[in-house]
Image: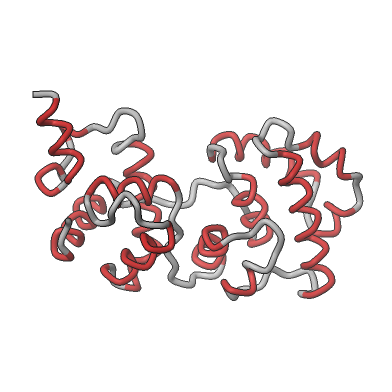
Length: 216
C-alpha cells in the first residue's frame, strides 16, 4: 500500500502536470452547478455542457423549471442518460429550494444532501466550487486513481476513499486535489489506456508497476 509520504509526493507531481485543473462543468452560479452536477451522473462533462448551453438559457431560476410540464424538461435533457429520473429530481429540488430555502442553494453540505438527487459527491462539488468551502468529492476518476496507486484497496467504499484522502491531504488542498485527480484520471491515467510508460508516479504506483511487468 502507498505510504502517506508517497501520496503527498504523488500530489506534488500531479500538481506539476495539471496546475490549472478546475471544474469543467460550465456554470454561472450555485444553482446552475447543482443542476449540472446532477446531470453529470454517469455522463461526461462534455455532453452535460452541450445540453446546459441551451438549458441555462431557457431556465434561470428554480421557478422556471416548475413552470413547464415534466415531459418538456425531459425532452430538453433527453440526450443525457437517466434523463427521466434526472428531470424529476430537478423539478423536485427546485420546489424544495423555493419552499424551504427561499430559492437559494444552501451552503451546508449536509443540508444540500437533503435535496432530491443530490448525494454526497454533488454536495461536495457545490460547496467547494460555489462557496469556497474545502471539500473532496470522489468521482469515478478520483476513486480509480487512488486505488490504482495503492492509496486505497479495490474493495474500499467511495466514502472510505474520501475519508482517507482527506486524512492524508492538507485541508487547504482538498478542492485542488479533487480537480487535479480528476484531470489526472481523465487525461493521463485513463480507465482503458493509462499512460503508464510516461507516468511520473510509476515508481510508487501499484497497478502501474504490474502493467509494465506484464507488458514486459
